[in-house]
Each structure stands twice: as structure tokens, then as C-alpha cells.
Image 1 (cartoon, protein in one colour):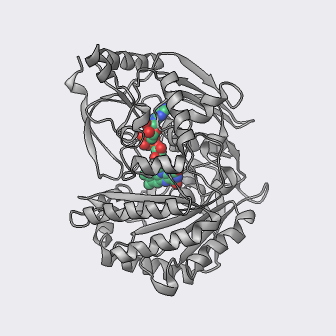
Image 2 (cartoon, rainbow, N blue to C red):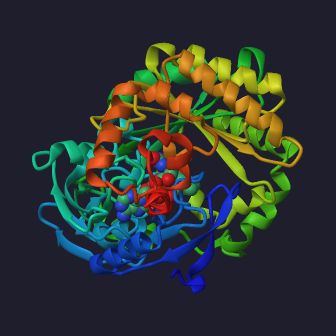
Image 3 (cartoon, rainbow, N blue to C red):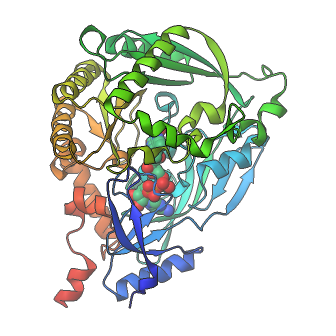
Length: 482
Ligand SMILES: Cc1cc2nc3c(=O)[nH]c(=O)nc-3n(C[C@H](O)[C@H](O)[C@H](O)COP(=O)(O)OP(=O)(O)OC[C@H]3O[C@@H](n4cnc5c(N)ncnc54)[C@H](O)[C@@H]3O)c2cc1C
């Protein structure tokens, strides 16, 4: 019998969806095995969850069991000479940078927030602002151990069980549970980076400048004012970062300390960061965001070509400076539409997307552009090109129209040979996914699923919504038919 004491509401990070789940938080591999046994005995499925930072329903398993790995938080091995790190899956990006920075190391790839767990990060195979140079996080995994739903532990590396290695990373928690992961960290020679800001007049200017600068920069991120139209469509700014070379920082001990990196608790020494979201809330409406976007663009013009220094934490995790900022989007929440389009089609594709948002009267509140290279994993969103991530406020009034619009945006992305990323998704349809991934990839995933999870135990709302073909039978169905 499942114990109702375990019933908890779990949400999509974007707050557009929540459901009751039987939540279990084991702290050992044996504890995970016991949850699998409980699920099998009760004809339930098991969804995996790290910190729940995926925007949609990727880490929710409505009315079923949800296995949260946030208590498996041990750092199992660290070698400050080689930069090899072995961790349990619930260790977060924040835990890692705090542990290694004093030894002069940083993670090779980080997302825009430090809160994801390593298990969840590899469940999605996340990327950073240096994807065009460093690839995805999975490309820095030396080896991992996965617990299969059969109870067996599988050790994998690019050489050992390579087929499973390249499928498990990025397979959104449906093949097994990462229980220990060894990663190669990156040497750094300062806790600061050189940052320069460049105003860009329109979309073409932004993409061209990114293309020109990519070979000589370490991190690139473009921002777009989605309210601009006509000749200025896609105007914005580009931030370029360069890391320090050996010996360049006169006092690396200071900048490589946790204390130097941690943001202050108060803004300007008086306003606690924890209450900032209450002020931001007044700007989360079409007029407020129009003004904010214009202000950002003008700031970009003012700072044009200016150089500055920023800590690694501030340069990478700016959004974490504003705790609870997503609550400014309540009651409706937010969705993100992130598309990845090959370089030769990116201008036409993104232009059409931005124009379509104007046609619907729903410009995005935040838009970010990054540069990518392809990756070697089975479930891949990467292209040799660009991504554009658009944040939309969901309200009672716009919900239906927004849903129609993003379906239209998906068609534009497919027309331009683009791809999508499960970590950000809340709205895709299965036919869109099968079009961009292709039948061969889906057949491979389905074959691996039936080989390594023969009882189809590992499922989430997202996997059922987008990959119905991999869930041919459910444990419930098996029990009913027996
Ligand atoms: C503000 C913000 C900024 C972001 N910026 C970026 C960015 O720049 N780049 C980027 O790539 N992503 C970004 N993301 C998305 C985020 O990095 C991913 O969603 C990541 O997967 C979240 O990790 P998590 O621990 O919260 O995992 P969850 O969201 O809890 O889970 C993610 C997936 O992994 C599976 N999973 C969880 N644990 C395990 C495990 N131990 N073994 C196997 N599967 C598991 C889950 O079933 C789920 O499918 C951002 C998210 C936010 C909220």
C-alpha cells in the first residue's frame, strides 16, 4: 500500500502545472531499490526529480511515485591536481563550485542558475553560454553509474557500455537513475572574467556579431528587446566574456574564494535581495516590460564596447540574485519557448518567430540568444547554430491564444530544421518531437527503454505527453491484464 503521508504537491518550475505525487527521498542506492520494489508491488510508475528546475512537467509524475534525489548529496572524490570530481546525483552546481573554486577549478559547463542537481543536469544534458566551445555538460562526464529499474547497477563511460552512455545522458530520466557521476572540471586562473557589452541594432547585427566573436571569446550571450519592431526587430545587446590567463590576476587567492563569489545579501547595502521580487512584480505586465526592455537597450548603447570585470557567479547566475523572481509571474506562471536553429536558417527562423509574436500581440518578456555546436548524444537538441529562448507570461486572458501561438512557433522552427529542449518545454506535441528527433532515434530510444526498463517503470508527465511510443505497456496495465 502506498502511504498517503508521502503525498505532496510538486510543480513545474514555471508554475503552470502542479500535481500530487507520492514523494520519496532516499539517501542511498538501496533506498532507491526499495522505492522500485514499492512501485512494482503497487502497480505504480516512478518519476525522477532533482531540484525541479525544469520549466514544464519533466520532473512531475502525477498520482504516481516521485523519486527525489536531493538527499544523495555526498562528494565522493575530488582530486585538485587533475580536476576529477565524483559526486552523488543530488549534489548541486552550487555545491560543486563552492567546493572546488578555492583549488582553482570551475565547472566546464553551467546553466543560468546554480540550483540544478548533477543528476537532473545530466538527465537533460544541459548547456551554458559557452556551448559553441565546450559542448554540453555530458561531454565532460568521464564515467557514471546508473541504477536500472531491475535493481542492477550499470557502469558506463564513452568506452564502457557506450550505447547506454550516449543514450542515458539527456534521456530525461526514463532509462535509469544516475547514482554516481565522475566529471572533469576546468582550470581557472582567477575568480573573475573580462566582460564587454555591445549594442546590436537588429537581429541580423546580433547574429553576425556573435558569429564574428565566437572564435575569440569564452562565453557569449545575446539579449533581445522583443517589443522593438520594423527595422529594429531583434535589437538588443551582446555580452562577451574572456577568462583570465595564467598569472594575469595579481591576487587569485582573493577572487577564487567563496566569500568573493557569493552575492551580498543586500542590494546597495540596504535592500534585502529576498524581497526584490515584490518590486519586480510591478513591472511584469506589457507596459512595465516594454519600459524595462527599452531601458536595457539604452543601457546597452551607453555601455557600448565598455570592458569590465565580473565574478564567475555573477556572470553565470545573474537570475539567482533575485530569489523567488518566478513568483512575479503568478498566478498564471511562465513558459519558455526555446528553439535551436542551424546557423544558415537562424536569421529567417528567428525573424519569423519574433514577427509572429508581434502579429499575435504577445511579445516575449525576456529573450536570450546563444551559439551552439552539435553534440554526440542520442537525444539531442544541439545544432551548429543558435538558440533563442523566449519567456512568456501566462495569464487567464492570454492562455488559449498563447497556446495557439507557440504551436505556430513550433511549426516555424520545424520549417527551419530546428530542434527543442525538454528542460524548457511545457507545450510541445508528440508529432513535433518525432519530426525533429526522427523515427530512427525514437526507435533506438524505444528499444533501449524495453531492454533496460522492461517493466516501463520510469515515467514522467513529460515522457507520457511527448514519447507515448516508449511507454507501450505500463505496470498498471500489466497488473490489470494478469
Ligand atoms: C532560471 C533557470 C535558468 C536555466 N538556465 C539553463 C541554461 O542556461 N541551460 C540549460 O541547459 N538549462 C537551463 N535551465 C534548465 C535546467 O538546467 C534543467 O532543467 C536541469 O535539468 C534542472 O536540473 P534539476 O536538478 O532541477 O532537474 P529536474 O528538473 O528535477 O529534472 C530534470 C530531468 O532529469 C531527470 N532526473 C533527475 N534526477 C535524475 C537522476 N538522478 N538520474 C536520471 N535522471 C534524473 C528528471 O526525471 C527530469 O526528466 C534553467 C532553468 C532555470 C529555472
